[in-house]
Image (cartoon, rainbow, N blue to C red; front, side):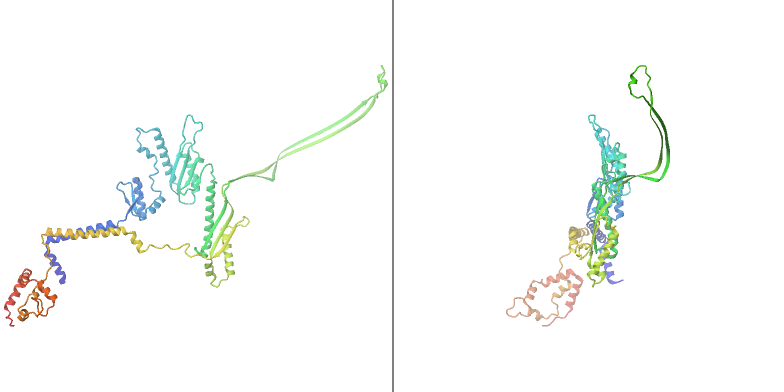
Length: 551
């Protein structure tokens, strides 16, 4: 075993059990204080995420945050959740995707906390409406894609002197994840209408969390102005995606920009059409009418004369004109049955009336593809090819009046995709300035307590006297005494003229000053005895046995 280790062990044994235990306790106390301080100072500051939560919501929020790797803490009351500073927005977005917290949508359990004693009919009605809103909101949140929902219901009020009864109405705000919010809006309208007595679907308004109107009024086809604007934005976004998918493999994502403006018609169209098939006629009935008529007319005439006025005179009658006629008539009516088809078409979609497309291409990228020596004609030809690609990807139609424009220009560097500068060292240090100051102050306090508090306390417990002020060692004191071998002349010689009284020959004024300040030989000898009696006795015996020096 090395001598140093042996000496350390020997020194430790010389302290005794009491001192060793006291030193160990002090060391453990200091280490504990430093550890607690480091944990406390490294602990991030917490911000309140939600307050007034139910126990079930607190448990679910804790599970979600733990899975996401976000630290959290629960308040002492058990109804609030805290997260590290700077992660509040991230935590709320994550919980919103999971539909948490759900405590705001309280259902029929509201009646569990309402006492029946002293409860008025108005309070009962309000509680009933709140409970109904909460239950409907929970049901809406169970629909796929709906992350959160809030329902407001206005119930009808009965009055004896009111002629027109107020009809109930409702409004729903949903947070939807996906692109089929309009389809779910129709289902939500019918769900709410069926859950509220006397409520019709056209009295339910549905909006999303961005304020977009999804369904309102008696417009089941969603052809309102807001709906038209939403369809236009959807069509423009889809066409823009088609352009990006077509040009990105060829030019790269940062070497072109596309803008699309679509004129969309969302009017509802209803068409009724009846089609007859003349080749499929079938005799249904035949009606035949026959008529045969014959007539013969004969007229006798007497000539007008005097004889007609004579009495008892017989007049002579002569035959008049004669006529005869015959008429045959036949009428036949045939009824045919012809096949017919009636078509009624109702269009609730949209029609693109016109599209305007503008695409700008990075000219440097085209030069890279064609080579540094590319001519303007080659670039123009390549731009024309790109225009054909865009026309094919977007469904360009000249008859519809569509307009497309593709241009090659020089892009300005740094507009898009420019990396964000990371904060420097000074900015990072500035962020933790408060923590660093607290840590430094705590360390200073620990050292002050250790040196000015624990050390005197340990000395008082052990009973040890405080060490005297450090003085010269035994060897230094011995060397300062005059030895018997020193020549007497060197001690008793007279100082030169002009020297200070008591000055040594050959000494400088500074040495003389030190000699005067130095204690007398008797005092130094007494100090040697205090330091080491045995060694002092040996030195004195050696001096006594030495022969006397002759000067």
